[in-house]
Length: 132
Image (cartoon, rainbow, N blue to C red; front, top):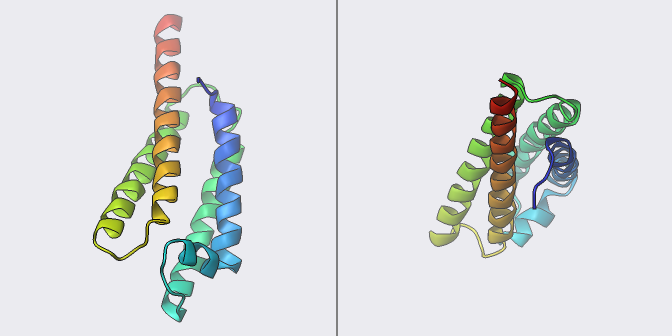
């Protein structure tokens, strides 16, 4: 299934804002899914991470109508690196026993999002070649 950059950006913005709310106000929910206990330290990191999700949400929401460009490619490329890195870390934490199997849900979403943005970048690159 081929997604447009606009659709993917809107989905990413919505997901980011949702994660910001969860990590910011009820981090113990996500932590319990991952079989990680809540503490003052995990709460601090969760709230700080929430602000990064707000920033991602704003960036992708504002870029939703951007035509193929270097800037749009940079946003997509950065997100791909980030989510594939998070997926790798998630699997590593699960294998080492630092997180429970619930983290694999996040890993699955991260891989799917990364692949979707790679596909969108490929389509944009092909479009740019036909225009030149």
